Image (cartoon, rainbow, N blue to C red):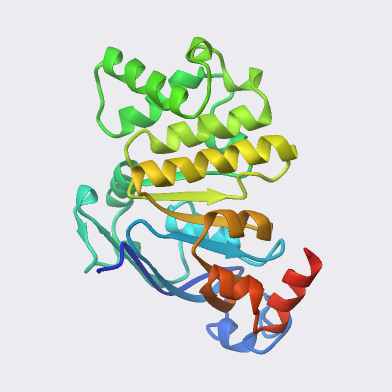
Length: 279
């Protein structure tokens, strides 16, 4: 089976890089280059993601997890690396490095094939626009034009994500944190993306609300067979949702493998520390 996503050497450096930043920090316990002082937020990351697979990315704050997601969603421009998407609806067959495409074609891929749910709902939603309006805004970017069809689609998605349709014309600022996250999920799913990116979606939510959001994500995966990348510092979330996991530290992948293997028999000292700290 051909991967849906192939990532090779993906790197994001903040600052004025010296050209050897990734090599300089390779064996260091920091992501700050000792030569030029640049911050390697994501350094030489490579992996494949297959259709229908759920990949977990775990690590402490500042490990580069969210940076990775933002690079794949084209929120930020990568410093180096190659990304190949195999998504027919975005006219991508896995042979072209999408990082080299123009901003227009990157938007096309994002609007037709990618969905993202941010940790902070304020980044993914316009709080003063209705819940239905947030979803419609996403549909418009995918060339939907009929208002009736957009309202029907919005109502269907809100119902699927357990938001009362009667509240479709309310702004998300009136909703609880868990409801805001579910509106984000509805918006992300509106264009039937091939890949859903979930960035710390349960952080800051009450335990009961976390459980409902996780159940929703699992049921959506079963129904839609959508590929996902789940970013979290919570190993419970990773265990619940993912089949394969990458562990990141200081912008680099230090261990990867099947989720059960990573959590039951971690090999890297950092992974062992993460697992033991959450037992």
